[in-house]
Image (cartoon, rainbow, N blue to C red):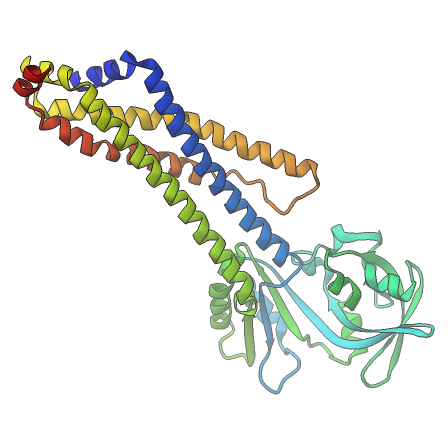
Length: 383
C-alpha cells in the first residue's frame, strides 16, 4: 500500500528524530506502566496486610441471642457460595487468664483448626510448640506469653465470668503480626471452648473469607440469602472498616488520574510532532498529490505514522516499565519490606499497550486532516 510505504519512508528519512520521538513516547508509557503496577500491587499488599488473619464476612446470632444453633447446616450452605475460600465456626467468650499472681483479661477462642487454618495462619505463625490437639491445651500469643512470663509446657488457669476455673497447658506460642491479637487471644479447640463456657454444641460466630476482600459486601448479601429464615445477622469487612475502604478507593482513583494525565500528555505530544511533520513534509506531500496520490491516501500516511510511533514506543516502554517495576520489587525485597505484592498484571499491561497504540493513532487524526487539505499547487508554488 502506497500510504504505508510513504509513512515508512518519512520515518526512516530522519532516523534521529524518529528515535527521539519513540524514546520520548516509551518513557511516558514506562512511567504509566510503572505507576499503574506499583499502585495496584501497593493497594493489594495494603489490603492483604490489613485483612490477613481476619474474617471478611461474619455470621453472628440475631437479636437477643448469644449463640448459633444448627450452625453445621449454615456452614454447609455458606460453603456453596461462589468466591468463598474459607468457612470456620468459632466459640468465643471473654475470660481471665492467670499464672500465679499475674492475670490478664483475654478473649478465649475455640476453633476447629483444620477449618480455621483457611482463615488464620496459625500453622505458619506458631514459632514454638504446636496447635492444641485436645481439650487440655491452649495456644497463646507472643505478647501475652511475655506478660505472664510463661512458655510451652507451662500451666495456666482460665477463669470464666461465673468464677469457674479450668487449668490448661500451653502447647504453643504464636505471632499473628498484631500485638493486640497476640496479647488478647487464647486459642483452644472448639470442643474445649464449648465445654468451658457451657455452649453445648453451639458456637458464637461463623467466620468467612472470600477470594477478593473488596467483594465482601456483595458476598455478605449472598450469605444473607443463603441463610434466609435463620435468626442471624451478617457483618462484612467493608462496612466495618469504612476508613480503610475509602483509602483504597482514593488510591485507585489517584492512580487512574495519574495514568490519565500521562496518556493525555502523550496524545498532545504525538499530535504536535505530527503537525510539525506535516509542515516539514508539505512539499513532498504536494508533489505526491501532483503525481496522482489521492487526498485520502495522503492523510492516511500520517495515521500510519502515528500507529508506528505507538507500536514502537509501546514495545520499548513496556520493556522499560516492567523492568523498572521488577527492579523496584527486588530492591524492596532485599530491604525486607513485603507490603507490596509482586503480581505482574498481564491484562493491565496488554490493555495499556493497546490503549496507547489506539491513542497514538487517534492523535494523528488532526495532522492527517491537515495534510488532506493541502493544495499541491499552492505547496509547490510557495515551496
